Every structure is written in C-alpha cells, then in structure tokens.
Length: 235
Length: 234
Image: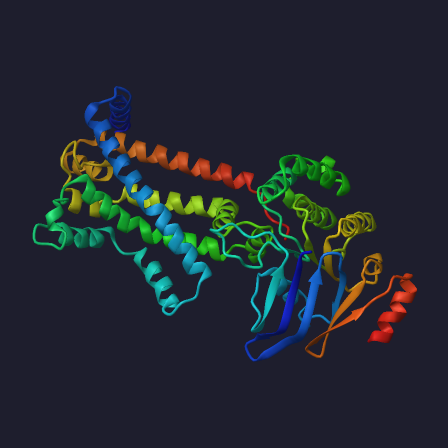
C-alpha cells in the first residue's frame, strides 16, 4: 500500500520536473485566468472597500451586509449565474465567452470581488483616524494620503489579496460550468484534479495538488515574513 | 503675512453645543495659549483651524498663503499644521518618517537638506534614525513628530498638549524647538494643562469657558507674574 503511494508521488514529481506539457498547460491556464481575474478586480474592489469604510450614504449598512453575504455564495451558484448570462440566449450571449478563458475570468472576478471588498473594508475601518489626519495636515493630497494609508495597512490588504487568490485558484464549480474543462483551453488545476481522479489517474491529480500545496506554502510564508516585519503599535 | 480668520463660528455635535466664537485671528508671529477644561473643545477648535473638521456655522478664511495647485481643492488643509497630543507615527523607522514628510515640502532642495539636518540635531534623533518608530518612548515620539513638522517650515502650527506626560529632558528639547519656531516667525497655538515655560512664550490667550471662546492679550513677564495674570483673567 505504502509502496503504491510512494510510486504515485514519484510519478507526480516526475510529471512536474519532466515539464510534462499537459500538466504545465493546466498550470498555465489556472494561473493566467486567476491572475487576470485578480488584477482586474483588485483596484476597483479596494476603492469600494475604502468608500464603504470612510463614507456614510443611504443604504450603507445594506451594502456592507450584501458584500459580506456574497462572500459565502457557493461557486457553483456564481457559475450558474455566469453560465446563464453567457449562454447563447443569455444577456451577454453575443460575446461568445462561454467555454472560454474570458468567461472563466468573469466568473472568478465575481467570486473574488466580495472577498476583496469585505476584507479591505475591514482593514480600512481598523485604521487609526490620526493616520489620515496626520497625512492631510502635513499637506498630502487626498490620493497621496490614500497611498500612505494603504502602505500602513499593507499586511491586512495583502491578506485580502491572498485570500481572494486562494479562493479563485482552488474553486471548481464555476470553472467547470463556465469553462467546460476543455483540454489546453479551459482546463485548470481544480477541474483537472476532479477529472483525473474520476478517471483513476492519481499521479497527475497528485502532481497538480502539489502545485496548489506549494503555492499555498509560498503565499503563507510571504505573509508570515511581512507580518514579522510589521511591529505592533504602542499607540 | 499668513493668517486664519474665523468669523462667527459655532461647533455642535448633535444637540450639544461645544463652543461659539465671534472673531478669532491666528497669524504668523502670534503665540497663543489655548486653555479650557477637559472636553471644552480645545482639540476640536484646533482641528477646525487645520481644516480637518468643518464648523457647524460660520466660516474660517485663510489669507496670505501660496495658492494651491489647480488640481487641489483650495481648503484649509496643510495651511495651519496640527500636531496631535499623541502623535501618529508611520510604520517604519525614524528616517522613513522624516523622509515621507519631505515629499510634501514646498521648500527648495538645499533648504530641505538644511532643515533635515537641523531637525535631527534639535530633536536629538541622530542615534535613533534606524530605530523603528513604534519602539520610541513618549518623549521621543513627540520629538520626532515635531521634527517632521519642522521640516515643512510651517507658517502656522497648532500643538495639542505638546509636553504632557514627558520626561524633563524631552520637555526641554521640545520647548527649545518650539522657541526656535517662534524665532522663525511661525504662528503658534499651544494648548496645555501644565504651567510650563511654554506659556511664557505666549503673547495671547484664548480661553474656552461656558461654551464661548474669549481672547486676552498677554504680556511677557516671569512665570509667577503670568500665573497671577491668568488667575485674574479667570
């Protein structure tokens, strides 16, 4: 039994280090789609988080609760919604984005945006009011002050980015429904793991699982290093 | 000459009226002692003059300042600088805190370098430049905050309890820096609970009492004379 496991892990490492084109194509699709979704969503989400934290408008409380609720919507439900929007008869059917990487990016944007907004809102509400007042009284422009505040909050904001990226790079439901798991086009790590496991090809599934595990370790070490550098405040 | 003029202002928080004032003028060369009980609104008045808050009624006008760039709203912000009682220091070392503020300076590069050298020297920060700002003591934090403001060569500066809870050495250094600022014609508005040598620098007193701000001219004299003068004014 143990020998069987060892052989599988050996095969998995073999696939990764021999630069198996199929495995690396899956990794490439996964990362390009998730990075694109994250990059497009990042700045608008941080701006919305900032506005929710520093302004009070009619429906403010509802907006915050809505964003927090959207964080926990299952990815298959978002997949279903995007599918219905992109299908031939859907509102955006003319774009022909169903079963394409663009469609997957749209789906992943909808998954990571609430995470980014909710976590950045929490970060911005935790900032010391004196930080903003100090920047402004010293002569910083509005945008300059926002930049300094973001630097002050770099650890919680980076945590938000990592949480959002982790959620989209590991989600199966939306990618499977909107992407269709087409080899070398829309097959990403989670959908490939699901497929290979159902076929009984565990070596490739383990190889891809190892990539996610290594990614998770790298991200957490980065966050740990950043947290370590930040000193707790005495005031 | 740079000045702020507040006319017929009132500050309220909901139903609670904090204070009213008919006419206040804060100019360069003024050194004003702001007094009032806890919660009377000293900090709020300073924040109003700094442009960080808006009065419920009335207006505050800035005169004599350089015109702001066309893309920036011409507000009170950055005109009269406000220093918190417990200053906020940015995450990073002392050197970073000083360099960050230099970005907002309108002085020439040569003057900026000269101000940096004198700020470090006056605030005795030479040995602390690499120290993380969060590890500084209360006195060192206040000295760094004052050094940051010093870099900008402000026309008007408001100091909220600048020497409260500070050791004797830091008190002396802060008082020395404030004295130097006065010498450079910076207008100063100082709130303080303590009878200190800072009050001796002042030529005017603003007092918040019974929700009204009254102004009194002071005269230079010894601390004892000044205390007697304050008692008489009360």
